[in-house]
Each structure stands twice: as C-alpha cells, then as structure tokens.
Amino acid sequence: MKTIPGYLSKLPGYTGIQDVAKVGMSVDQCAALIGRFAAIKKRTAIIAAAHMTGAAEWELKAALGRWLWEDATTYSRLEKRVTEMRASKASIDKVLDYQLGDLLTEILHAPGPLELCVGFFEVLSPAFCAAIKTYMERTQPLVDQPTIRLMKPILAEEEERLITGRAFVEALSQMDNGAKIREDWKNHFQSFLHAAGGILGDEPVTKPSTPLKPRAAEDEFRLSREFLRDARFETTITKSPPEFTKDALYDNMWGRSQEMTAAELMASVVYEWEDLPTDAFVDLARHCWDEVRHSLMGCAALEAAGIPINSFPSWIGYAHHTMNVPPPKRYAHLALATEAKLMAYPGGKRGAWEYLRDVAKHPLTTTFADFDWADEVNHVGFGRKWLIEWHFKGNREEARKVADETTAEREAYYAQLDKKPGESLSSSTSY
Image (cartoon, rainbow, N blue to C red; front, side, top):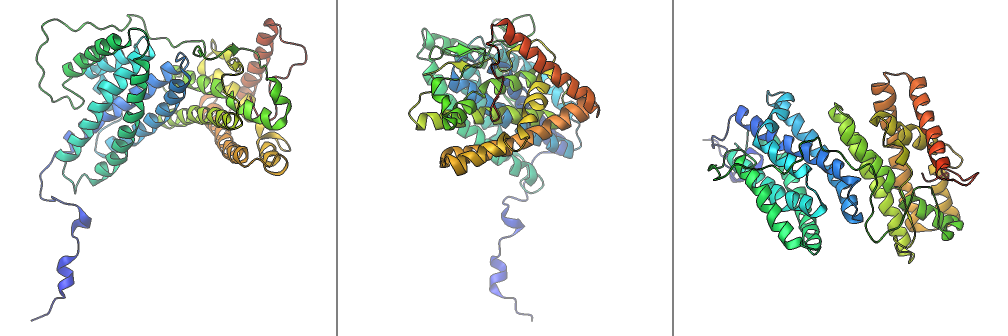
C-alpha cells in the first residue's frame, strides 16, 4: 500500500476559502445587488461634485473632492463586475428608478453642509457598510470570490471614511440649531431608506401612516456658480499674491495653495458634463482630487512655515469666468490653456521642482513639487484623451481654438474688474 506523507493532509484546501459547500446566491441575484452598490456610488460621486463649489467650509470642500474620486473609482470597479456577471451597464441606472433613487435625490438637495453630512454619514454610509457585510455573508465564497475580493477594500475605505464623516457631523452640529437640524434630517433620510427596503431592497417595509414628503426642490438641482469660502477667509477674484510671495520659495507655496479654485472648476465639469464614459468620469474625478491635493500641499507648506492659510485672501477667480460656458470649454481652460503650457521646459513644473531641490533646498516643497509635476503630466493626458480625441474627435486645431478663447475671455473678464495693466495671469508654476 502506498504511503502518503502526513503533511499533505494538512495543506490548506480551496486556497484557504471556507464553507465551499454553501449554496449562496445565483449569478442574477449577485449581479442585481452589485448593481445597487454601483448605482449608489455613481450617485454619491455626483452628489460630491454637485456640492463642492457651494461648500463654504474649507475642510468639507476638500473632503468632497476626495470622496468624489474615491466613489467614482469604486463605481467603475463595481460596474465592471456587473458586466462580468451577464448583466449590462444599463441595469445599474435602472436601480435608481425606484425608492433608492429618491433617497439619493433627497441627499443631493440637502440645503446645507450639516444636512449633507447627516445624509451621507448617519444614514447612507452605515447602511452601505452593513449591506456589504450582508452580501459577503450570503454569497457563495468560492464561486463569487472575485466580488468578495472587490468588496473588502470598498468596505474598509467606507468604514475609514465614516470616522471622518462622523467628525464632520459632530462639528457641524455645533452651528445654530444644529442638534434639531441633525435629528430632523436624519429621520427624514431614514424614512426614504426604509421605504426603499434598505440598501439591498429586501428589508421589511411597512406603509408609513402618512405619505413621504420629499424636500427636494421641484426644479433640477443647480450647483453654486460661486466658489464659496467660510467666514475665516477673505476672497479675491483677480490674482493678488501676498507680500511674502516676493520670495520665490513662498511664491511656490502660495501658488500651490490656491489651486482649490481649479478643483472647484473640475467638480463643476464632472457634475455638468453629461454622458461622460465611465473612464472619463473617473479621470476627471481624479483630476479634481489632484487639484485638491495640490492646494492642500501648499497649505501644509505654508502652515509649516508659520503662515496660516486664512491670513491672506483666497483666490477664487482662476476659473470664475468659465462657469457660464459649457463643461468641455470650461475643462479646456484648465487642461489645455493652462496645464499643457506648464509642461514647457526650462521653467514649468520641472523647473519649479529643480529650483526647490537645488536652489531653495527645501525638502518638503521639493517632494510636493515632484508629485505635483507627475500629476500634471497625467492631466495633460486627460485633456488630450477626453477633449482632443473624444470630444473634438481628434480635431486638435478646434480644441486649441476653444482653449485660446478661454484665455482671451479671462483677460476680458479681469479687465472688467479693473485688473492692473501688465498683471500676470499665471506664473510658471501655478494657475
């Protein structure tokens, strides 16, 4: 009789996956639920974009830029998984034709920052986390391992965000009448979640004693066309560098700190540019988050140097003049008219990095400039792909014409505001 080594019986089977005899859910059932997750993430990304320009609180504005990109990428991954399971992308949007869409519409129309954060972090996000856990408990762990692998980091990110989100709710609840607003809107949003049968649509629903009363405005939601700042800040539309920027090192810090206005432009583009392909949706959301990060890099450098970011006016006018033009033209002002030109060397992004490394010898801003430069290279690629190749169908001359128009329109806009003759619209390293 053949002797079988004992260690072979101790090897972990099924690659470590447990409960492999569990029946679980069918492909159609899994696809339907993944589609619900995807639909929610697509809509929450859009909600973040919609509220970014009108969020006056600096910290919330920055966070919305991050959540926009994170949710856009999560949506893209979930969309791909849906199509792997014999379902179409169109099935995702149909999920929101019913009560779940009503909940998200109510959150979109949240009238203030506290109401928005309550909708996100006291109602939607906790339910979303619980639904992911329920899904992973129900599904067959061997056959649906690709989905489980996908869901684990989504859940981890959502739970991490919940910590920050709840901190926003607590802080914003300190505003006048905050406690009542918080309780009132939490109950309001929860009533819509309950009417939808929860995130997965399968929770018991009892008919409410009175019909649900949406608070969403009858008109289509319209984002703020002003780039708002909270009471800590003064603002300026024209580019007005503070006195300390006469030092090139501090000019670099300040210029980067002012890129929040470019992020706000990008959020408005993502929200208003209809029918973007998923890849474009993700790339433009990333562009927005990059501009937020660049602004925060500048803020971190200034604050490390003892200069509070609210000690000088916040420049909101970089893209102010584009808010009434179509989203593709608005985007052309940033990606083609501005960032493509910042690639020129000597000078440009590489030149700024070399100056900080070799002349200023400032390690922190050198690191910031290094990553900023890498991001800007990607942005130029986004502009080439989604403006020149996709929107203008490869017509480079037409794309350049539109970009040049935005520069001329900006000059005229500033002239109306009594811009000083000869004042530069942009330096070699900032907008």
